[in-house]
Image (tube, rainbow, N blue to C red; front, side, top):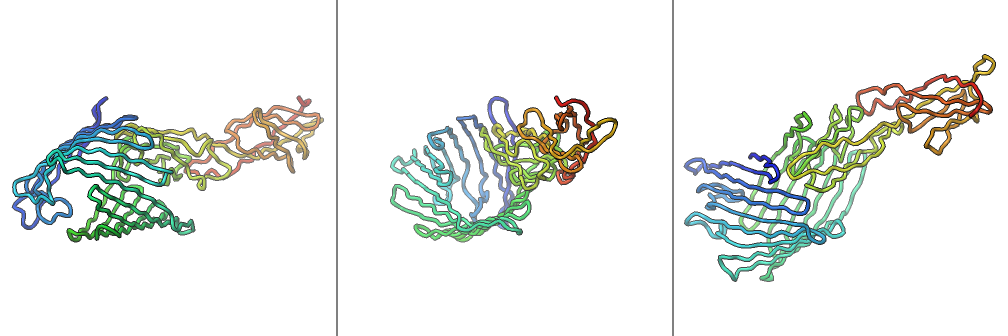
Amino acid sequence: ALSTSVPYAGVLETSLAGSGGPDASGISRQYSVAFANVYDRFGYRLSYRHFTAGFILPTFEDGARKRDQLQASVSTRAPGGSLFVGYSQSRTYPGADSLRNPASNFLFAGYSASLLRRISLSVFVGRSLTTPRDTNVSAAISIPFTLFESLGERGEYATQAQLAINQDDRRQTRADVQLGRAFVRGDSTYNLDLAQSIAGSDFSALYGSWLHPRFSASAQLARGAGGEAYSLGAAGAVAFIGGRVLASRPIGSSFALVRLGEDYSGTHVNGLPSDNKGDVLIPDLAAYVDTPLQLDPRELPLSFQPESLSFTARAPFRSGVIVSPKLALKRDALVRMVIREGGVDTPAPIGSTATIEGREEEFPVGDGGLVYFYGIGDVTEFRFISRDTGCLVKLVLPPPARGGIETLTAIPELGPYVCQGAAP
């Protein structure tokens, strides 16, 4: 498969596939071409796919007799969700099984929405142009809810149940129950799902997947009226962005390269770890949507905090963006203050204070003239006052050790700084 962007128009996608079997006389082929784009509130797609005779489709033990397929659709935002309309045409070779490879020519429309951030609702309407009386209406609702979840030393895991109900205009109802188990261990996520139809069908399926930061793998076993089918697969992606080539899970509609800097190497963003240069590729952004990105606060030492732990990324359709959040380190330091009187230096007494312009808090002096400053930058000017003595001090912190956020835990001890003169 190959895709390339056409400026101001969209994305051109092409693919070529081949299939063969013990009884096949040669390699059968399938090729496709599609043109699509998604704007802020509008999207479209036009695709054409051609099959040579005998090309094998998944779950079909004999050669498929589909010849070509044409589809065009447009979508737009609607209240609470999205709306789409389209046209589809499918033609077959002579002698094709009408049940497995039906010829069709119809218009369709649909609406989907997400309610309360958890309940999914979809409605689909199709109208055949070949047989005008053949109209299909279906509706589906999905309500997931968590049965059990936990966070422990071995990782995070959760179990979910989901009920989906579908009814068409022939009053045929199908209800499916799906149980899912998700487990997070380290940087990988494992999923195991079991689906069982409880009405209107004898369909059942077992599905498992492994999501690694650099690839994904899956396995599926399904049983239905047409028999049994199984599949195994692995997928990954390579992105060239920001002068680097990065391996990733499969990339969806859009993606982003988040650049944290070397000080934050190993820090996770949305569950994905940054590499030794502080870069992390986020492969699953939605086009033209502000996707929230979150640093894992558990990996940051208390004495080294960025200005913000969350930010957003917004990418065009089938494109990537580089996000460089402002992550200026806020550091801590111990500063030793000394008062010079009559040529003699003595530690600043307990009860003396230091203040930083723009901050309300005062930093008190402790034993030995030590002042503990927290949440300051690399260069800070503070005002020191002790009884009738005072001065302005420019504090310059030494560069932090490089090599990852775990090396930034040492609190420097600076000074002594000598103060003499009348308090301002």
